[in-house]
Length: 480
Picture 1 (cartoon, rainbow, N blue to C red):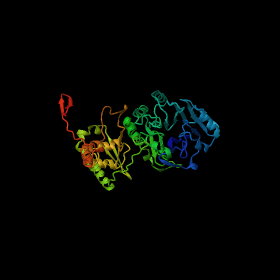
Picture 2: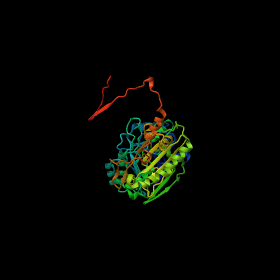
Picture 3: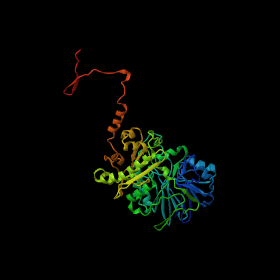
Picture 4: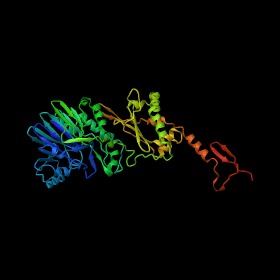
């Protein structure tokens, strides 16, 4: 069996005797102009192979793209969920062979079998199983899969060879509805546990390969809490037997399998090409959503001096401080372990470092890390002011120039996620920078204002006397 990744949820499946196109989205932008497939790709439309079957998983427009469907042959067999909207639209486009498939329905196509799998979502949708003599592939698409569904599938197919897994706990509308935009531990845990229950021979993180564009691009900071690298690592931890067979497919990649042998070909699809890897645009950063940090440098600090002071602090002083206090102050950071990412926003550019507390020697590495789980963002001028003693730490906190969030957990084989409840894992930068600047800040304020004249010529010359009785302080009456 061959799986060609067209992009996002669009795949082309070739079995022993059948060619299947599923959820085709062949142009960008899609979803009413809101989304582009990510990584960026080119679909070479005149090279798309002939196919026997078209499958639509559900009505969402990143799976049910009218423009793409309009350019496809209208006499192929089309399988859809129980959704009159999909059926009516396909009929208007000219498709004539439309078949509705309820949950747990089988379709026989020569030696190829298809089987629909139930979703707990309220939108009519299904996942699909492709089975032939080479093996069994379960494409979960966007479905929410219950343990009872897994049990039923495993009673029918004793072994799932390839699982295109539901994996991304998306936060599509949380911000818009004033709901939590913190890391969604529980939904993500359920996705990982499902992989452990299914016990496939190979896993692909399915679907969720797009980004918001144009006026909606700010949503990229909250849409995808989990990186693909993060899921691929975690699925190996919860189900170690799959460790050598986890494949994050980009547009244009090809995956084949037969008799327990899996072969991955980057760029192996001749009708889709990856143009560029723009997945950095999907950095989950809920503390910046809608209001990115900007350093206006209102005190006009010398930028070259800021660069030198901050580089020395982060690249030299912080690693030394962490190593010297590893056992005393950073025990929990090492136990979980923490990958700490620190981003400093300068007036014209951004610099990012990360510190991996799982390493024997902790160093500042100047690059982002897709596995980071503790994050800090700070403007260069506010950090510089604190380091030089010009400002107190409250200046950065209360001014909104410092922001931090975390997505800390550990993955236990078969069990899933555990979280650091009732355990404080502090931002290493806060532990390192001076916390005794307030006296310096106030001394400068005193020096600046000490010779000020009283307002309204209100000069108070009377000297009073106070006497304390227990917990009470009493001003004594003066003799006239």
